[in-house]
Each structure stands twice: as structure tokens, then as C-alpha cells.
Length: 156
Image 1 (cartoon, rainbow, N blue to C red):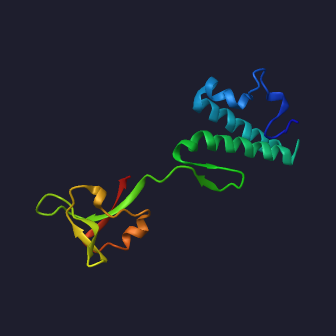
Image 2: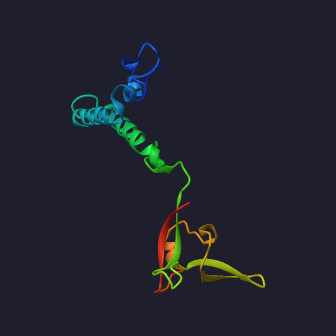
Image 3: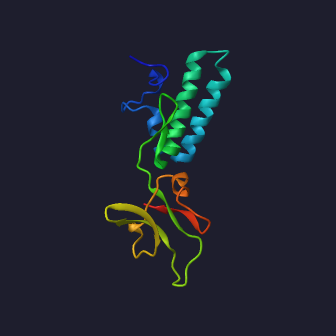
């Protein structure tokens, strides 16, 4: 059964694919985004005079296709509930380090030390940044700073 919004009968190719699925191959991403924008605008401007709710749903479908084409490579897309859904693990983390290099031309970083089973924060030189405490958010890292320390973004 043909769905006029998500699977319109008139756009089915002889190969079984829909036109919207082959446009990136024909026009490239930039051309495809332009085509999808045009269609979204077309349906938005005519919905009150032509097919009402169905045209609004078609416009939304084209906006979702733009979102998927442009932003899915950045780790999130919009789905049916219109909330971003993150698909890939975060790769950026935050560390706390000294604002200036010390005498040894190196930064001091926040690490966790251990003494008789107690864990405590230490600002120390490290040979490998993997030993440094990494935070998921800047706000979380800022809780561990003082006037001589700063938060820096690092790749995981």
C-alpha cells in the first residue's frame, strides 16, 4: 500500500528504489539538499490551498531528509519525535591543566592520586595524557579548577 507522505506511488523507479534515494548519486549532497529545500518550501507554501495536513507532513519529511543527509555524519539526526538522537559516542573530552607552562616547559594536569585507599586530586606532570582525568562536560571539569588552572578540550 502506498503512503502519500513517506512512500508516494508516483516516485517509485523501475528498480524499486524511490527517487529520493538516488538523488545524492545524481546530484551530489549539495544538489540534493537544494532539491529537498525546494520541495519542503513548495509543500509549506501550498498546504492551506491544496492538501492541508498531508502537505505539511511532506514538508516535514523533506526537512528530515535534509537533516539526515547533512547531519548524520556529525553524530545526530532528527527522528519521529523531533528530538536529536545521538548515534555515535562522544569523542571530545575535557581536562584540567595549568594555564601556563612551568619551568620545565610542560603543563601540569589534574590526575587522581591514591594514598592508603583514598583517592584525591593532584596537579602533576604526566608523560602520557591518557593518565589525566577526562571529563565529559566542560562544566564538570570546571568544578576542579582554581585561578591557576584552565579547562582544555581534547580528542579521545
